[in-house]
Amino acid sequence: MDLAHDESLRSPDQNDGEEQKSTSEQTVQGSAIPYTTIFEHMPDALLALDMQGRITYLNHQTESFLQKTRAQLLGSSIWEAIPKIRDTPLFQNCQQAKTTGKTVSFEYLSSAVNKWFHVHIYPSEEGVCVYFQDITERKQAEERLHQSEKHFRALIENSADGIALTDMHGVITYASPSTTRMVGYLPEEFVGGRIFGRKDYPDGGEATRRLMARVLEEPRKSQLLEFRTGHKNGTFIWMEVTGINLLDEPGVEAIVWNFRDVTERKQLEQEVAKAKEQLEAILNNVADGIVVADANNSLVYVNDVAARMTGFPSAAAMLAAPQSAFGERLRRFATWDEQGRPLPFKERPGFQASQGKKAHALVLYQDTLADQGYWTLMRAQPIFDAQAQVQFVVSVFTDITEQKEFEQRKDHFISMASHELKTPLAILSAFTQLLRERFEAEDRQDVMLHLSKMDDQITRLTKLVADLLDISKMQAGKLELAQEAVDMDELLREVVDNLQPTTTHRLLVEGAAHRSITGDRDRLGQVLMNLLTNAIKYSPQAETVVVRVAQTRDTLTVSVQDFGIGIAQSHQEKLFERFYRVYSEKDQTYPGLGIGLYIAHEIIRRHGGKMWVDSVEGKGSIFSFSLPIR
Ligand code: ADP
Image (tube, rainbow, N blue to C red; front, top):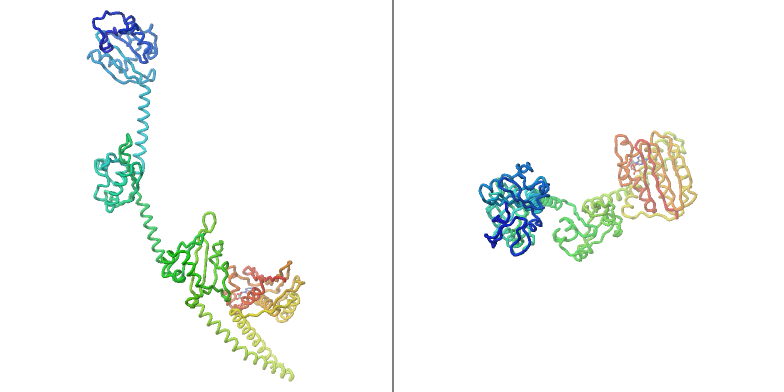
């Protein structure tokens, strides 16, 4: 084949009648450069075959592509020299070019050199000229593009979110399968239609129109809307849609819509809102006032009862009130503790809870404007965050004015009754004494025995009345304590000596105080007496009661240990309360009113001391108190 005679390779102004030279000798018109020089320097492979398929020319690039030298190939049939080529599209297409006389072009991957070629086969009378253009790089770029498109398509098609594209009129040009899945339609039922155009958007019409307007007005700014739409199956679903106008973005030229099914979240939100409503209804209907404050003492929640207690018409009014108005309202209330002392701020349960402690207090709220008092049980509890810091303080106020008034009437009655009983008892005691003296002189042992029993009961009754009177005094804050030097060792000896003849228990004293304390001798004696008589009373099977005295530099501690019935843990906290008794099958036979420990505890407290109990049920108890040594 003669390349120079190939029409397709000839330049348009090439002269037909030009004298023919061999391929190697022919030059480019108007220059001295032979064609072969150009062919040799071409980046592409060039191959000329005659009608029999013999190679008449191949350039340098073709050598490396066919992996054979020019000397090996020139003159021989390509199909025989490289039989494998017969199986490639090259063979077929060469035949086709030859028979049709038309140029054939195709793309072809050479497995021998692992390269892609765009092949052009130009037919001529002498045979064919084959031109291999290396397009590997372009192909690889195409492949990468294809891969990445596949990648993104897979992402879009498999994303839980729905993605749709529309033009500026809202006409859908693409809808991802998840978009249509969410509403139960097929993509083809969507594409071509108008976004938000379906009639089943029950209440989104106006909102979606405004969304569309916003999207169009502000290109590249994402706009969000939650709306309710219909599913093909007739149910409703909540959608969160984001639209972004990328109409002016080359290659996108669309509005991109992202849909998310938020039905579950919406349902949860509605349930939470409903539960909150119910809870508020409950909290507003309880009799207690409830206030929740955060760590900065700002109100978070308050119910109607609490609002009314503080002089606001409703919870909403209280929450809306500025801090100043709030403070003003509160200033009209004075707070007193049970003993009638002003309650220091730091002792308020709310303050205690803000410091992380659960607390309660019985408080008299005095509305100074209305001149009205409310007895309130204040309870406060801290709520901690994950870092164990106080996050909220929940305070509950229970109005116990009525209960308190009733209790006061009862206390008043006890006080009056004890007073009324005191005089006849004193008279009875005096007359018993008189009778004893008389019958003793007559040596009437039988009557003496009866009189002694009578005297015991009168003493018991007198003690009871005295205890009741003490309680009344304590309640009214009228218990007076003497301030004298008390030798505790001597006092203890005296109490033990008085008690020992009346019991079969051995009363043992261990340790000594060696120092006096300041206080009321009689009242401290009463405390020791109470603890010792209890120890004897509640250990009927035991033989001993041990009293221990110990002291440090500034405190004196006395403990009374018995080996009796003991006290269950659940009762121990309440033992020192007024009228508290432990009732159980076993100790129902023990007489008493549950006031001895209350009185003892109060006396010690009023001396600036502490009283506590350590006890194991069935093993015994240790009641202790400590007093400051002044
Ligand atoms: P009471 O007159 O009932 O003994 P107290 O106030 O002295 O009243 O005691 C209150 C309750 O504490 C008693 O009813 C009893 O259940 C319990 N208690 C007091 N001391 C002891 C003790 N040493 N051992 C067991 N229980 C005791």
